[in-house]
Image (cartoon, rainbow, N blue to C red):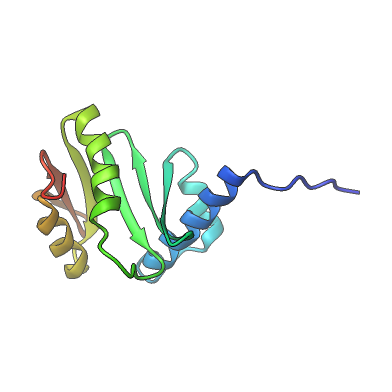
Amino acid sequence: MINYQPLSEEASDRYAALAMIYASVKDRLNIEFEQFELAMKDWKVTPLQEQGWIIGGVLSKENEVHIGYGLKPCSSIRGHLRATLKKVLDQYGSAITSVMAENKKGINFCKRLGFIEFKQEKGKIYLKCDRCNYV
């Protein structure tokens, strides 16, 4: 008989945030959640909450960051961005991210934050930010 242990609250929140991030990109990734979860095992996952519910998350690995919302926030996301990007900018001096070239909405979102395109490769746009407009 297998004795399963319940997830800690931190692990449960990480899982929920990953599920929300996955929901925001699954149509573009064409992989199952289990593959996505495995690919993110070395990434820090910061759950984004609103009114006590996890609605998305931020993936970070050194100065690379990605944000995804499985549920549309009811209020401004500036607080989420400020808290997350400030730490990365303070620690590394810049933040980088990548967006699929066909994801015009995502590219425009990053540019509004202060990210500037520095490279295109294999269908991705790479962007860098030295100072975020919301931090």
